[in-house]
Length: 193
Image 1: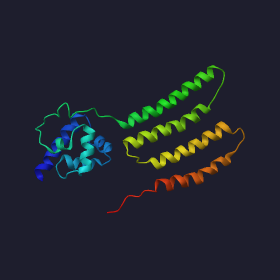
Image 2: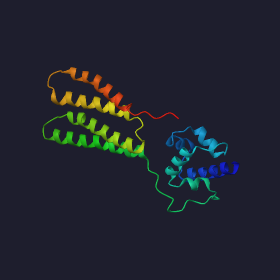
Image 3: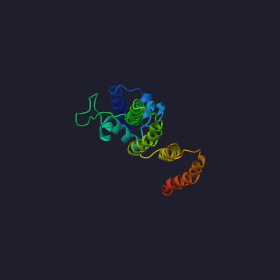
Image 4: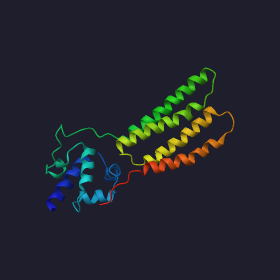
């Protein structure tokens, strides 16, 4: 077991430093503390198999690569794949939607119409984009909050677009809709072992 700890520690240090990453950055990417990463790299403990899988996916190698001694060898070309920063891709996608809304706003402004509602419409679209990307890359973690914000943004969009009078009562719909969202997210519960 000690030999396995040392092997994993060496490979982890090699991959992390090769990627120009600090322990805190690695810890953040795999949702663990930097103290845990430090213990793994000092061969004081071994990450769980699910954590090893996350680390392997992050660096574009196999779990087998992590547990096999390599003597400072770099992973083969077929084991390498670029490290993709999903948070940055999500941020670019969401900001792209607001950039498009700004473009539409400016074009309408140049045509003599000031339409602030373009930004009101951009909010639900950006939240839908965020929901999809979060579902793909974070396995739906925090989707409840995103769907709740989406529901409120849709109500706000209807309020600003379709009601010329101050009909704030539309926001009362948020109460039953929030209950539906809450119960909908709790329909399936994980089994206890």
